[in-house]
Length: 236
Image: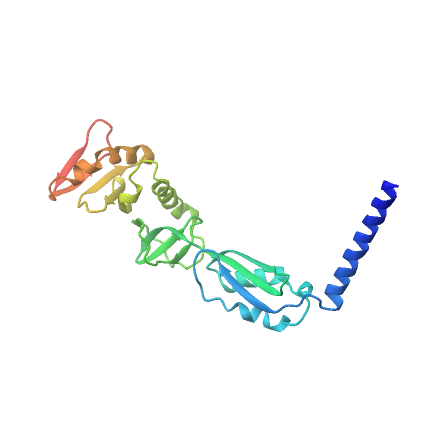
């Protein structure tokens, strides 16, 4: 008897669901009412109403969600993630994140550099600025040549992880120094030459000595960290 009742219940449930779908689709029981924009990280002027106005009053089942996600990516290359969802109340909810920089990079013009190696407009971010690279005709929101930008991303990620405890203090990173990598520290006039090799280890050493060297007189031009057993200071 229980099995029979269970089967009858399942049939009623399936038929009720089918009837609801038919009602939603053919009788517009749930209709598109308006657009709602909820940017995930920061505001950006996307006119989402234009993606909805032609569907107001129609069934939410007729709204082409996937097509408008693709449209948003095509029209707004500054978007890193986007989603469009239908609300039972008739709201079409647009949600997105912008491409965010992990460092600044000076290519004659200062840009933001994303984790994927794309250039975005530089704002008022307080983060290290990378110098010393030469890239012809850079374009916003386009991935840069990996062979040219890969090392810059490696260093930027290393600084941002801040496993050395010095990341927040780094003001600029010079990839074009004749002896390899060099960095400047905030409120410190000296340039710290790290050279080539294990950048994490060299930044660890710099973190150990940074406070000492930044407390010295301002006439120290650079401190050479390239050699394990000695530090070389040069004056102006």
